Each structure stands twice: as C-alpha cells, then as structure tokens.
Image (cartoon, rainbow, N blue to C red):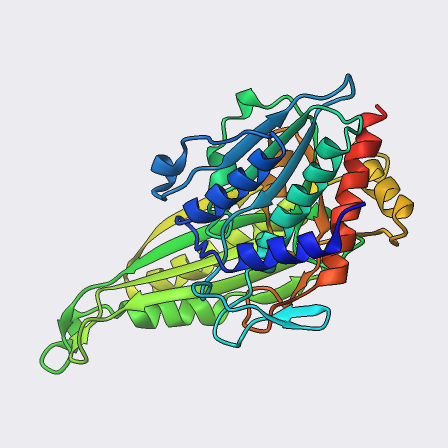
Length: 370
Ligand SMILES: [Zn+2]
C-alpha cells in the first residue's frame, strides 16, 4: 500500500522547488535524493550542456527479473509562470495562490514514479528491469527526450506519467511541424518614396488572411503564432518574420497544410515583387498504439486491478511519448491527475494522484509477471 500522507508531503515539497525549463537541477537533485533513500541511484545523463540548461535528464536503472524491461518517464520542467509556487491545500485539492501555474504538469508524474518505485522496491515485489528517465526541457519542444542516448536503453515498452485524468490512457498523438517564413520586400521612406518600397507586413497580412488556421478537421490543427516586423512608422518595412505550426494524426494532411501555408506566402510575395525565405521542420512524429500492444495491455490491466476505469483516448498535443515511440519504445501516457495545466487555475486532486501512484505500481508488478 502506498502511503497517502507521504504522497501528499512529497508532492508539496516538490511543487515548492522551482523547475522552469533549462533550470531543472534542483528538482532533479530532490528526486535523486528521494530515490537514494531506498537504494536507487539516479544520474544526470550529461545532456544539460547540449540543452543549454543546468540539468540533463535524470536516469536510473533498476535491475529486475527476466521479464522485458520497462521504461518509466515523467518530465522535470514546468511552463511559466512557475517560480515561487505557493501550493494551497483545500481539502483534497491542491491549487495555486493565483500567481503561478501549479507545476503538477509534470510533478504529479514525477511523484507517481517515485511512489511506485518506492513501493515496488521496498516491498521486494518481483518487477522487470526498470529504466527510469526524468526528462529535462520537455515543455520547450521535447528537447531532453530528443537529446537522450537511446543506445543505453533496452526497454521496448514504456509508460509516460503525465497530467490528465486518472484512468486516461493516451494511445494516439499527432505529428507536428513548425515553420518559419521571412517575407522580404524593400525598405523605403514612407512619405518621400513609398513607391520604391515593398511592404513586407502587407505581404504577410495578405498571406495570413489566406491561410487556414484553427481546427481544420477532427485530426488536424494549424496556427500562426508569432509575427515580427517593423522598425519605424515612417519606413516601409523590408522584412516580416512569421512563425506557425500544424499538427495532424494524418501525415498526408499535415504535409498538405504546411505546403498550403507556403503557397499562401509565396503567392502574396509574388504579387508584390517580394521573396520568401522558408524553413519547416518536423517537431515530432505521430503515434497510434493498438489495443493489443503490450504497453496498452499493461496500463489497462493495472487500471482494472486497482479499480480504475481505463479510458483509451487520443490527444491533440505532443509529449515525450512521441519521441520514445519514434525511437521504437512503444509508450502510452497515463493521466496522473493534474487539471487545467499551463494556467494559473491548475489544480491536483490528492486522492486521484494517490490512485495514479497505486496504478503505476500495479503496472510495474504486472510487467514483472512477464
Ligand atoms: Zn507535461
């Protein structure tokens, strides 16, 4: 049995430790010390330099029986505003004081892994070899997971502990592309010789007005998120930088959307005699875990054994699970209770988090049965 009071006090301690992206070292240190209390050694994988942060990923390997190895993952970092979190406990709910996010995304996942490991290790339960990875810089674009050295991992299945309702098992996530475009026109004095200029803001405006953005269909979304241009009111702006993204569960639809964005930009530039510098890259690849897959079967069986109603669902967002799946580690995502994440309304139900801890411990135990 996982002790409720300990889950609560561990969560409150960890929530008070600042862990913005690229500055996860204090949270990683806290977790390493907690794991050491029951004999698990965790080490920084040394990727902090490459990430330009003060922490790499925190990795622990726990030898187990002959069952296939299992990866466990949660991310260390939080989105802003996440410094100086002052958790307020109201009965079963932990919320913020309104100034910050809570950081339950993903400190709840970290606590679930910590509590499950403590239970499994200290009770001496049979378990598979466990490869535990607490990732840095997830929120900035899954950077820690991308920097990880996959040659050191043997697990082919895994569980990612994340925010979301307890019992939810995310089995499907989209691919995402990010794009940046620089529209290039020509500078000119706006009053003396405007005809000599080519207005880059005007080109961008026309292109953006043509683009499809928002929810395009049930599996595709698109956004224009950033625009930068202009130095002075009286200068025809020579450049305008526009950045956006698109996501889809269907790679064909994603490719079609991104090339349509590019067409809008190029046509607007052509009409005005300007040019477009275009860059696009794949942020992450989609995954779709079948119900008969081992990672899903473990999550579902674990849920039933602890009295949770397992619900398989898709997500519109990306997470480290996209990266692990792309590296051949079949991962589902467990909801570990925090709600309204990425807002100052974020809150956690302690009893739900406790159930997530029990759920994860049971999954590890079932995985140990081979
Ligand atoms: Zn998260």
